[in-house]
Length: 306
Image 1 (cartoon, rainbow, N blue to C red):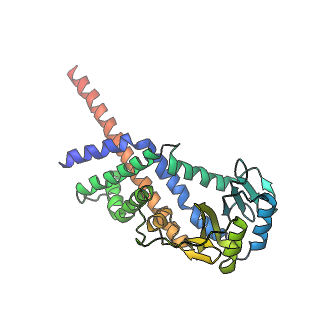
Image 2 (cartoon, one colour):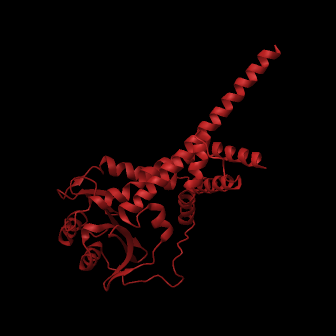
Image 3 (tube, rainbow, N blue to C red):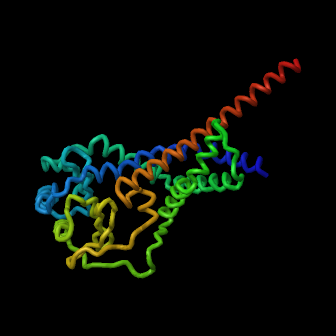
């Protein structure tokens, strides 16, 4: 039985090797984003008046459906307006002028997120590969506690068992996000009368929070949702003329993205990604060694027979 489980474990890894490699590498890159973003925030550096002026300048018709603030994109960060034009407008917060696009670091995070979440418009492959990762973990557990040794196989097995909680949490929360599982209370989400423009939403945010900690503002139906860095935790609020109303925490997303406790949670995600990549790489090397050994033995046997 253990041999059959091991064979199944290997074949699933080989079949999904390419999408798993993409998910794991992009996941490692994205693990650093919350830490980079939080550490780049300078309290008080971005005022409601400045944001309002930029919106008036770059979206005079009030067509924008949302904005994203990247504190790490340039000396003073950047703001991206979505819906104000045919393509997103990227505005340098240092100069207030539009620029061709985001910087290299922000671009790296953007491209990594697109691959990690959409896999070139093949979201079904993301979910299937994530489920395959959970199956691999289950097969590893079913094979039982390993004999630990100072070898590549011993390190592979030891790493898997020692890091088991992290190894399980990452793909499991990823699947929860894909299928909309939030574990939020069953009570209706708080709603507020939605402001008609982003400019009003900015003023609502500034009434109770430092705008420098703004992550994004998005339109959701007739409402505006606001995400803020709240002492390292990314909180989402419903914005209305009566103020901000905190929405229930989406714990699967907070855990998966590593933005529930600033640098600490980001480092947990980094370690998780390193462990998963280590398991993936050592597993492929072990398979490669086994395959080469079998071929050498087959050639040697053929030579003896001849």
